[in-house]
Amino acid sequence: MENTKLWQKGIVYQIYPRSFMDSNNDGIGDIQGIISKLDYLKDLGVDIIWLSPVYKSPNDDNGYDISDYLDINPEYGTMKDMDELIEKANQKGLRILMDLVINHTSDEHQWFIESQNPNSVFRDYYIWRDKPNNWSGFFSGTTWEKKGEQYYLHLFSKKQPDLNWKNPKIIEEIQNIMHFWLKKGIYGFRCDVINIIYKTSLEDGKRSLILTGSEHYHSQEGCHKILNVLRTEVMDKYDAFTVGETVLVSTKQANDLILPERKELNMVFGFEHMETDQINNKWFKTKFRPNKFMKVISKWQEEAYWNANYLSNHDQPRSVSRFGDDGKYRVESAKMLATLNLTLKGTPYIFEGEEIGMTNGDFVSMDEYRDIESHQIYALLKKMMIPRRLRFKMIQKTSRDNARTPMQWTADGGFTKGDPWLKVNHNTKYINVENDMKDPKSIYRYYKELI
Image (cartoon, rainbow, N blue to C red; front, side):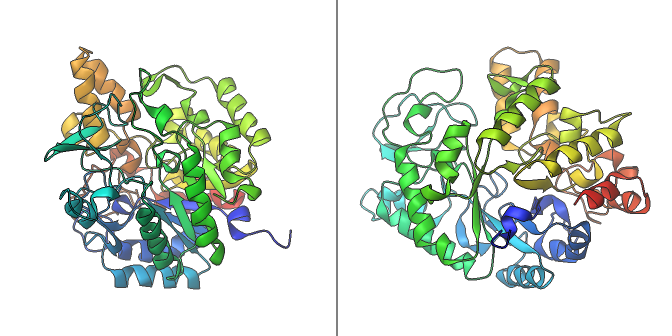
C-alpha cells in the first residue's frame, strides 16, 4: 500500500540502554555504545529502535523515575550524544522511538520538590490528600507516602509520585516535552502504563487480591480525552507514532485506544497472552499451555485493529526460557518463537538478545538482583510465610532482571571491560552475537532471513 507508514511495515528493536553496550567501561551501557552498534542493527534488518528511558533519573526504577525530561542521565552520556544518536540513526535509515513515562515522575523532579510546599503553584501537579485510601500498588503495599501534613499518591515506588492529570498545566507541560523531542527528529513514543494516568476519583476501592482501587483509574474516560489532545495537538503535526503500554486491557478496550477515528494511539501492547502462564498475578506461575497461549494470540489477531506483537521486553522473562526450552532445544525453540512473532499481523517488536536466543539470568542469591520490584516482592512473600527456597524460585522465574542481563556480544561478554552493573549470564561463552554471526544455522541468521 502506497500510504503504509514505516511503523506499519517495519520492525522495532528494543534497547535497554543500561545493558546494551558500554563504551567507557564503567559497567553501564550508554548512548555511545548504542551508536557503535548501529551498523549491527542495520545489518540485522530492523527499522525502528525503541530506547528504554535515557532521561535524567536517580534510577530508583532504572530510569522509569524521571527527574528531568529535557536532559540525559549522565551515566548514559550527554544531550550531544543523544543528538548524535538520532542523527546517525536517521542517516542509516533507522528511526528512534523514545519511552514517555508520564503517569509519574521521580520524587527528585523539580516539580515534586516544589510541590511539597502546600502554597506552591506546583502543589496540584501531583495528587495530595489528608488521609490515605485503601489502594494497593504495582510494587505491592500502600500507594500513599506522607510528606508534611499530607500524603501523596504513588502507584509504583514511593520515589515515583503520580502526576495529577486533572490539572491542565500537566497536559501543557507534557505537550512541550513531546514537541522538544519530536523536533529533534525522533519517530515517536512508547507511552508507559498509559491507560492508568487519569484518576477519576480517590474513593476506596473494591477489595481485590491485586490492585485494589484500579476501578478508579483503569482506562477512564478522562484518559481517552487526554490522549486525544496529545494526538491532535502534538503527534499529528509530525511523521511519528505512539504505542501504549496498557494494563489489563481487553481487545475492545484496546480498540477504544487505537481505532483511527478515536485519534488517540496508533497501537498498544496487550498483556493477555503474557498472563496465560500465571494465576492472579505474574509471581504465581502455572504450567505453560501452548493451546491456551495461541488461543489468546489468535483472538487479538482477529479482534484488535492493529497489533504490537512481542514475546519479550525489559519487564518480562526471556521468551525462550518462558515459552520454549532454553536447554537442549534452545535453538529450535528460539526459531519457532521468531517465526510466530515475525509472521503475525501487526508490528513486531524484538527485545535485545532475543535474536541470539538469550536466556533468563543465572542468579543464585537475592544479592545479585538489582530490580526494585523483585526485592519488594521477595519481602512481601517472606511476610506471607512462603519458604525461602520457594520464594527465591518465584523470583528466579519472573524477575525483570531476567531480561536485563547485559547483551552477550562475545564469549567473554563483550559488553564492558569493567564490572557490569548486573551479572552477565555465564552462558555467554556459547550464546553470543559473535558465534551466531559465524554460524549459518544460528538463531541470528534465522532472524535475518525472516526479517
